[in-house]
Length: 166
Image 1: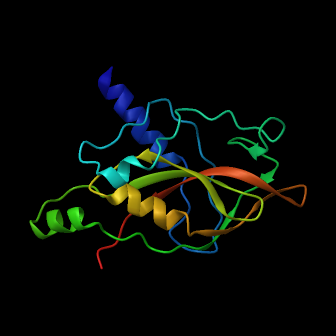
Image 2: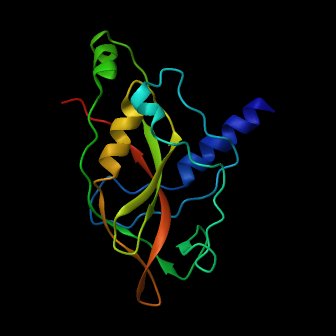
């Protein structure tokens, strides 16, 4: 049973949402996940300031003004500008020691009708200060907003962020 849960969560991450690493490409729709989001054991105080995403969003243009996953009539947002997230000092120290850890963070957000990120929250945590750095970078992203019937609408997506060592 535990293996089946792990496989399902891994499959959802592989199939579901993330904006492409290339700018000027459409984002993919965010598929709801079934497992609760958990912080990494090595989360710093800065990481704890980034809220965890709820397990499920009940988005609807009619109720909360946010187009949700599965709304087939919406043209998805287009990523225009994507600044890199930086390594934290904690992660940099681990990297120097030769530790091989996954430093991927998944951030949920709403791309509002003007193309700005809103309601940033954490879906997958890496800890070591990387969650906070990823959230800061995502808040600077710029998008072409999603559209429905030619009008811009808010749309919820997730992006995978891999902080870069500078």
